Length: 235
Length: 334
Image (cartoon, rainbow over all chains, first blue to last red; front, side, top):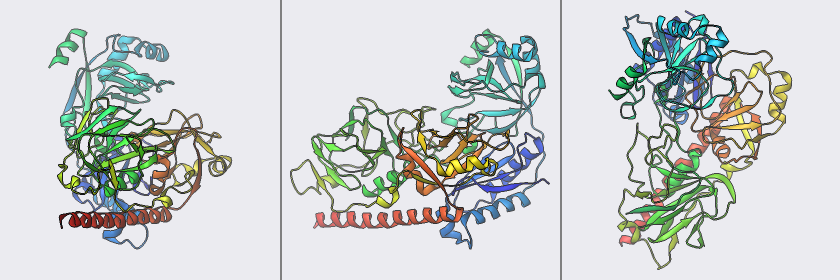
């Protein structure tokens, strides 16, 4: 299907990488491999972390060594497993419903929207229109608990991260970075350009493993006002 | 019965070997910075290696024991003392109730670990006791320990109390672990090459191996920022986010290196110059701001070999410590 490289990211972790791309087909393959590995795990497999165009596994090298007694290195054994996952997994196309996420673009929440407007020479109402008009794919969860990386935003909205990250980005903040858009599930430092806030709680510590937004999902934002934000925050 | 924090240290938190298997949810592993020291602390205290321990930074806390306990202190040396008497590290110790454990003078290392036999009575979050300080969950109320916090033991004191042979405040058990080989040459840190290592300029490759790097004061449980000669890639590389691991050495846009530590994020988007080998993470975890690092590159097979040797040593100690402890208990019952 496509070229890949498998390389160690430590002596207890390895990555299979399809190049530095934000491409739906590659991400689908990565997800298919994740599913295959979940169904065919090897003893000592500790975690599987998927990203845009790569899949990484964390493993207990000593356990693998003792159980499988690989001829060469444990990494060679793991590399073989990743190759198997690549060869045996197949993408299953399925219809996914579009999840609609409310966002309030009020200036009190949209900490960087004026900056983005100036930088990209677009009106604030156009930023909102452009941001809400596209359906985004959720490529991965990373950075912090439940943080969805979504792409790709309209070209008129692509903007680099802030040069100096903000010390505190409030939870619910919706941001832009490059061609990506994302939502901060918890208060944290961060460098994305914040253009709004959602009242939806993306991360619940009691249900940390039931993500509201997960890889493979389709997401579209819709605009709400402050009053609706307040009402939805309560529910 | 329990221990009570009379005076908190600068950063004392409940940790274990990390919250594994949650990377797909963006939830990081966390756990003890020095997993080796945390593991040995549990082994000496007669616990499973996955029990919760207290990770202590300097200045350390003052901890009141409200019950007799079998404890061990490992990792950094902050001259642990009970009331005013010094206690050894890396050795099991029986402690009488109504005594205060403290860490008055800094000697070496960055993180000490306290384990108590039977472990602390805490709830796991996602299968781990580790405190996720950023998300405010896990461990003890999701935060560092503070004045008045009372941590209960899971095990009653009666078996421990029977081991005392004198009226002293503490009594040492006769065995200890010699860990000198794990921490020898504390500044020499080995790494395997990262995917973008090849892209370094010739000069940068040389600097990486030949120059010294200094741990910057902004370093913390998430990562060590390193000061040193700036490194450069032959050409700029735009990267999309990808998983990173404990020990990953990233190259920031300003040419500086950062080594990801226990609380690192699950994914990152900077070039990966290398990955510190697992068996050197304990040494790395014991470095402090202004300490120096000298990197040496090794191949994957050597990194694995050293890891297996360290794990084997742990297994041997585990068996020996548990046999010793069983014998002591058996003698007591006679």
